[in-house]
Amino acid sequence: MTRRPYIVGNWKMHGTRAMLSEARAIDRAAQRHMKVEVAIAPPYTLIHPIHREAEQIAVGAQDCHHEDGGAHTGDISGAMVADAGASFVILGHSERRTGHGESDALVRAKAGAAFAAGLRVILCCGESAATRESGKAVAFIKRQLKASLPAADQLPADIADRLTIAYEPIWAIGTGTPATADDIAEMHGVIRALLIDLLGAEQGAEVRILYGGSVKPDNAAAIFAVSEVGGALVGGASLTADSFMGIALAASEPFDG
Ligand code: PGA
Image 1 (cartoon, rainbow, N blue to C red):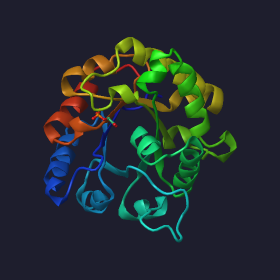
Image 2 (image 1 turned 45 degrees about the vertical axis):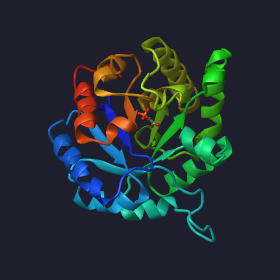
Image 3 (image 1 turned 90 degrees about the vertical axis):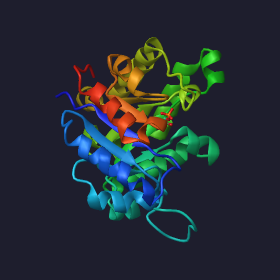
C-alpha cells in the first residue's frame, strides 16, 4: 500500500490565538487536497483550540514527557496532549536534543510513553554540519535512529501506522538551503534499509520517511520527487496557509514514496 504524502507543520515556539485564523485557512485548504495528509504541531497552548475547530487536519504536539504524570513542574505528558486533541507528537527534534540536552535514551523513553498514550510519533533524526563534513553522517544517523526507537518488542503492533521518521539535517534547518536531492536520496535509502532491518520487510517498508530542513513551496516538488521521500516536516514555511499549502499542493502531484 502506498501511503498518502504526509505534510506536517512544526510551528515551534510561534503562535498565539491570533494564529487561529491561519490554522482555519490551512484546514479549509486541506479539504481541497485530500490526496495529501496535512497536519500541524502548534505550541501546546493552541492544540485544543485548533483541534476543536479542525475538520480535516490532524493536530499534534512538539514534545511530551516520558512519564504519564507526577511531580514534573512545567512538563506535559502524552496522555495530556492526547486529551487536548493531539493525535501525534514530534519527538527527538534537534532543537530539543541540543536546546534541552535530550539523549537518544530519553527520546526512546518518550516514544514508548507516546505510543502507550495512543499517539502517533514523528521521530526526528539529523546530523550536524561537523558530522557531515567528517564523512560520518550515515553511521551517525543509523546509530541515532536505532538508539531513539524503542526495541521492536516494545512497539505497537500497528507500528507502520503509528510511526513516521523525519530526516532533518541540522545544517539545513532554518537556513533557506535544503539538503541536495542526492544527500536526501542517500539518507532516506539508509533509513529505509534500517527500518526494514528493525521492523521486518512488511512494516519497515510502510513507515513514511519525511524530509525536513528549509522545505518551501518553490523547492518542494524537487524534494518530493526523491525516492523514499514520503512527505515533509516544515518549520518556517508552515506558519502561513499560503506557503504551507503551496507545499501540500506540490505533494499532491505525482508522487514517489
Ligand atoms: P525549517 O524547519 O522548515 O524552518 O527549516 C524544519 C524543522 O525544524 O522541523
